Length: 387
Image (cartoon, rainbow, N blue to C red):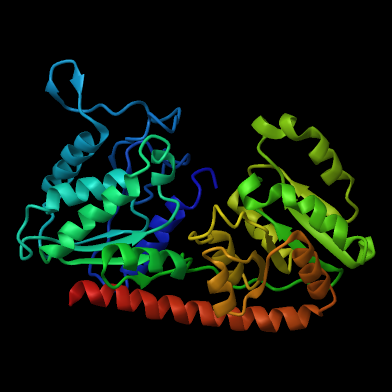
């Protein structure tokens, strides 16, 4: 998962698009490394990285922007606009085409609006834009608090002149924000993870809880201590098991005392901070319930790929109440939503006393509800583009 969920999302939504369009092409950053074995992964590497002033990535140098004046570089927005105009020309994008953004970022949104904003609706490609609450605008807000408003205003301008733009959001709460701001219908399309088959659920041993993904404060990594300590006052260590992914090596030393506590836990497996996808699958295979005590303020409008992957693998989840994905967890009856650390401990104790068969049956129903919701919402989003 070196590149987070964005690359997976490109592939997942390309799979979705293949059921609705004759041809599908994936376009990504030119700095995306190629497969080590040299095989063609089918990804067109075209775009530059325009966030070097807030996010430093070794393999992505400052954009080689064209110059208006020798020695003077364009602004990131202007450079992204020139680049997107080149893309439209290079691939002869026209009204018979559709541009689908699985999770549009700030400069992609602005460059799209700048280029297509001057087109007549009959000249414009169909535009399917999915907005997620994290976006790269989270970083951009460090330097421009009005970044989100800027994108909203540009999209309102495209809608006002009748361009074929269909917008969706990743969660119901973020959808409500967008509806109010855009004054337009907004569809809800959760993170989509096709091709993941449910895993057999462990039948032997205690119920196992998985805390996977980045070991960050906003993902509740440091809330695990009070939660687990409360659980162990009510259950014997043999009655419950944990799989916990630790921090990356670069930050391990900063959390020595906390990691020492983690390693001292009975009946717990501690994973390294970065693991290959095969290990992620193995951790789901060995668990029954995902544990997600995410920060409510940070995730108030945000979704969670962890939740959706847990559902696809046939696992339940214990989620933080008040997050964007908590409504989805309740809609699918995917486990439990909790407010405090003590609530999380209560939920763990409750699930630890269920049989694997009961968890499997509830997870299978939650998975079905999720897939039905994704199918219905995706069709509505794409159908709106064609209207």
